[in-house]
Length: 175
Image 1 (cartoon, rainbow, N blue to C red):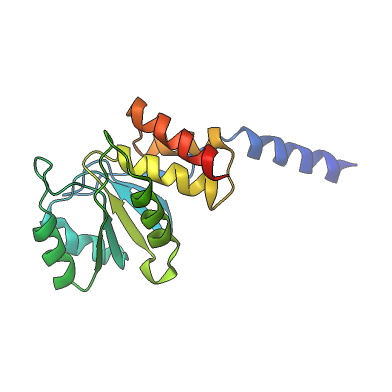
Image 2 (tube, rainbow, N blue to C red):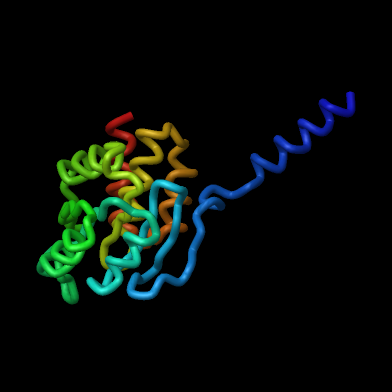
């Protein structure tokens, strides 16, 4: 009987842990709003090209950049060159939160599912688009409930209400 009670207590604690609790936020010089989701995924906002070597040392083998080349402060080609110089794969999937393209989401899902890209560092300007894309991945690929996926996306950086609406609609239309 004590074993059942202990198991029930452990289960209750596990269920009570909020979604996104495993996401680890930390300071990472040259990376805005850095978080580590797990051993295979890191997320963030804007990246200085000078930080790319440190991402390699952190264990990442690829970078997925969701920034538009036209964004203020974006240096897509400089970042690509820095990534290639240290032996990182560089995947540029420009994603406009104001006009989200489902085809970019499809490409993102394929890129993060490809084990040869892992561990992967995913970034945009602030981490909002990353949080949205990651929520889609969690809901569709990992079969998380929508509310839990969105909660983790918000922990990562999802803060744009219009993007959150797109994410929710995309998930519902692909389940």
